[in-house]
Image 1 (tube, rainbow, N blue to C red):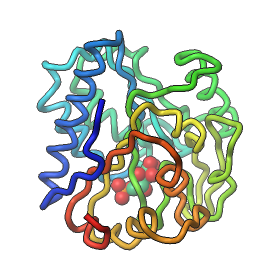
Image 2: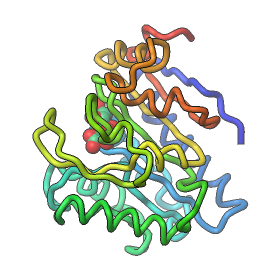
Image 3: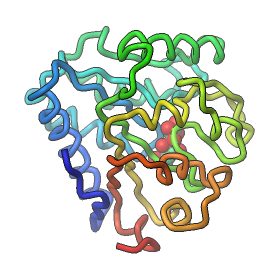
Image 4: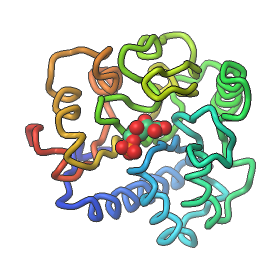
Length: 245
Ligand code: 6PG
């Protein structure tokens, strides 16, 4: 499956619409050859309208019984907390589609973070296989204005985790525990899609894509500067203003 690596849209609305369409297309293409389609969802605010659009436009045209929803990271809060990524995805997408409960693989933010991370690692190993080389068919990642992705934040050991598939750590910057896929499991994704919007991301996006290699400062580089061959960028012009097109 070949990707145009960098797609830039004039507005956030166009970006959101195109991203929902592209995710639906990747799911449909995958389901032509596979029994299921697995996607790791990003949290934050940018993807929320994408999930809403998937629910609005594709509730009836995607066989959600063959879709498995995973999470790239979660805040260590209850699943009904307003900060919960699961709560956001539930309101935007899950509540509007006919998807079996067992197809939703949430990180248990309400539990002890270390226990939740271990439990999630066990869950994805059971789903994909203990020694799986490839995990999620698609991993939808966001990027903060500091260059973090998932909950791999600057100057944290999480950026260099090379054994665990899922980790929990206290992130000073946000003053809370986060549970997150590690670089190892993110890079096991078959396809990776960065969804980035807004002028406030332009500097970090330049540094991540074209700046000096410095993953401790710009953690998204652990993904971007890897040898992963299937990374696609869904950007709006405001975010892409500093990168070479
Ligand atoms: C989270 C996300 C995080 C997010 C970035 C960008 O839990 O917040 O997983 O990595 O993708 O912080 O967030 P925005 O899309 O809100 O800018």
